[in-house]
Amino acid sequence: MYEAHFGLEQRPFGETARSSAYVALPSRDAALRRVRYGLEHGLGPALLYGGSGSGKTLAANRLAAEIAAPTVHLTYPAMPAVDLVVHLAEEFGGAPVAAPTMASALRRLREALGDHASRRARPLLIVDEAQLIQDASVFESLRLLLNFHTDGAPDLALLLVGTAELVLQLPAAFQDRLAARSLLPPLTEAESATYVVGRLAAAGARDRLFAAEALVDLHRAALGVPRRLNHIADLCLLVAYAESRPIVDSRIVGVAAREFQVDPLAA
Image (cartoon, rainbow, N blue to C red; front, side, top):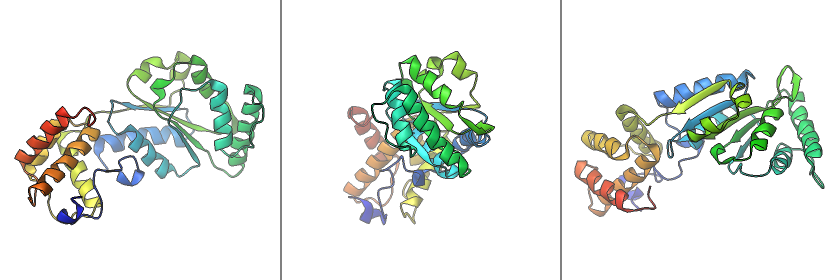
């Protein structure tokens, strides 16, 4: 709606989970470097966690793009262990599993991973919203998948993504094997400004669209949480467009922040 008014090619704060939406920030880059090192060197599974709206899925997608390995991004892990293994076997290229049992599913998955290993590829499994896993047998199945080896290192790289509750849910046997554990904290004031300006630039912005003090107020209103930044910044541009303003100032941020707070769907 407001894109033409601001000379933008697309909505800057719309699709936020694509790897192309990633903006390099010190806290995010440091977390991804730790996770990537452990995964690429076959040191064990890795854990990426943070609060709701902290950008975990975007960071995971960015990591997958950087690693450039065959990837399965599982977004609903709360399924029986045998269904999970059947799904992974088929997603990684295994033949369909007829009348599946855990044994037959594991055999198909092992064959599929072995085929990737023969091509010198280590597939990546991202288990998103992993805090939803309530069945200990699912964690045990995921742990056992790391025992598939061809040339020393595991044939599968595993990244668990979730909220802080996940840290407490992981069984001790899984905790002991973690190669990296990275927290995505709220953004700093400087990171929030860099994030907003970066998303605007990626959308084609050529001029400053947020006053310096507006960026400070935006960070405070969003508490440094990327999802909240997206919602409030989007509302800011909409309000500025409605008022035919060329730039977002602190007053507009205040209006957008109040609207965000009273809209239960925005949070």
